[in-house]
Length: 132
Image (cartoon, rainbow, N blue to C red; front, side):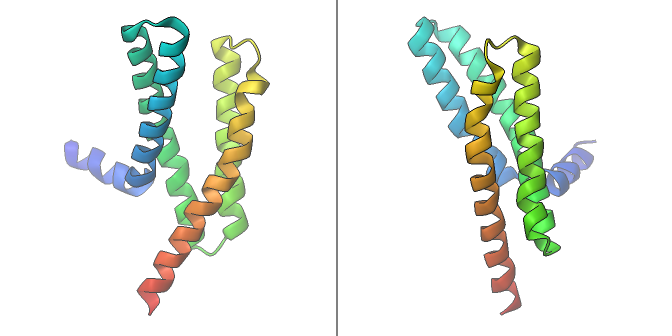
């Protein structure tokens, strides 16, 4: 069973970018919550939930970006994962009862396309190195 899970993760989740995003956003969420509430366990819980979500979902859309880059569909490699990330962020904040989900989505609107462009650019450089 664990081999199937491992194979699925290798194929559909970018471990490298999932972990990087999970660490970055987990620390950010912890810092914001701890600063606002001064409650260690609640802040840690929020950070761990964010880290898990980012690892799985961020790793998935990052792998999607890499797969489209491999197929030389560069615009789609940036646009599709960006739209998925922006839509998911807005949906989660809307369902969660965030007072202003649009404001919570703005950072994703700005950084997702830039991040996916960076991921696609790095993947393209990796592929070019393999050819030479």
